[in-house]
Image (cartoon, rainbow, N blue to C red; front, side, top):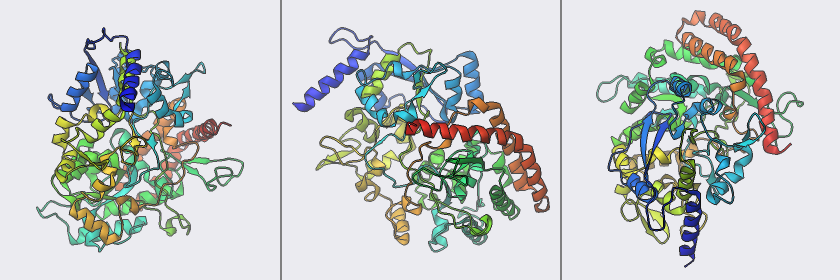
Length: 567
């Protein structure tokens, strides 16, 4: 009875939001929503079972457009022509569509009274999520697609930045502990010397570097992580007091912020890459490869290592798993500089942050949308247990089963969730990936204690793990792949600095990135005798834009921290 009442109450809340609801017993007016997703992808199959359920319950169908080409250029064209879809995901350039005025303020539709589920979802992090517009009004343009998790943080694997290495390399080397930059490249060099090609005669690539478009973070960001810090984008923030009271080299400046790319400690990394390029570990085409070409190389199993973020090459991991090439999948390592690179200092690795919402990443609703209330109402209902189970687990007794209140899958069912073709027919990833969602643990009801995501459910993560991975972890004495890095540290009050809006220094920031994109590959590929001179010229060239960006970020980091701390 209690469940029936709860369901009726939730339905009443949803119906109150939807002016298009017909008389009792009649269906909703059908509507097709246009959707842009700022990442490459494939549209679902026409007979996709989850989208059919969405159409049956909400009267909604979707027309998807996935990114093809350069993200910033694509968004620029849409903004210039005001060619906005109903649901608009700007990916890593979401600030462009926000500053361009493309999105509505969701706070006009989301409140504790009208949308209790959505409000409860964002409320714990509202200080980070709600901004001010030019008139000082509260605004929320995007509800994060990830990072608003329930319960204790789950870190079974690394979802963000790391130096990655194929499992077969570590197995061949006798399962060593790889903690520093030199150790990493030593094991890659040794493996490729002994195994220049795979079993089919295809040459191995020792280390790949993706440089295309906004994904140039694979080229730029490693330096801050080698210094032990989590991802702050293009600045290094010195935090020495974990209570966040007195920090940095100057006690009067909390969260001492600086650009890192022009500092001596960055030179050490790019000089190392120059050495590896001369040895043939890095191929020249890596600097001009498109994202698709990069993913194709990873999917072939021939790239032994790279710096990246786990989510960025998920399709390659999927392809390798589909082909059962488990030995060619990757382990995330939290590398730091060897002491010789940083004046003998011992650096502690902190790659993983605790409790980070993915601020301004996910779907916004465009100003062109004629039914924003209906989308918000749909999101509200989709945060119910019923729909979160559908999106995460599928259809009960078809895609998963429940035994003793535990969510479980057979080996075949779990294998399906890792099969890209199956997902196009049986998952609604196009909508779910960028919509508000539950993560972490189910906290209430009969299923409390289960995980929302099947890949985190202990019975699946450990019970249905492929035999290769089980043996690989056992060789290290680990229980999960997250054990290869240190546990999460407390999230700093400013969050992660890449989430800060750079628009006020857009011109300087753009110049800052352009110089890096041009000069860093040149230095990596140059004659070693020319490296020092090229580095000095680079530092001089980037200096003015770096100084302007650094000064802005120092103030922005302090302002963000003060906002969250309420000071």
